[in-house]
Image (cartoon, rainbow, N blue to C red; front, side, top):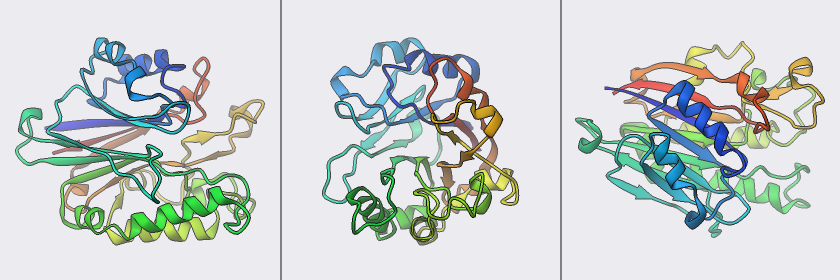
Length: 272
């Protein structure tokens, strides 16, 4: 069975509901994982999603900020939501797909929205940056996530808000002191990945020596001219599932859709 997963920081699901519909119509992924939905669960546009072909939903949202969701053509066996750093700020959702979804062996799918961290890369003066670092530390120390990465059948996607590699940003030297590419963030994200032997499948298709971006700032007058992007959105697979990775695409053109998010969708396909 082949499974295609889309991950996208939508930056308000209700404001950009038509763009979710366009993604569904043009790409037809089996599951759409959204971040920064900015929508409480009781206000989530479930009927519209079902009309797009996604009758199954897992939600973890709040009013105005953060929020994650998974929309699926396939039923879930279970749904899990975790809080980190003693904050219930709606940054994680996980589902298990099993026999009802047509799988012989269950697969667990995690969606994350890591804190952005603000502008100042100093945890002593910037509480948002301190929160981000603590969040990453807690993920690296999570034994269950590590076990899933090393020996489970698991996929982890989302806006991880760190561009770890040199060519994940438009200028490695100029962004070393910019939040999302600082050495301390890269070190902590890498420690989390290494704790579970998670495989960065996007870089299996696009070599690390090549530029790869999923986000372009709203501040650019014309993002296509400057192309000052960063790869903030990621797809990781557990060691047992990584060999089944088939293909990945970054829908760069979505950055030019009407009233776009500053992130674009990433689609990954696995042979399960």
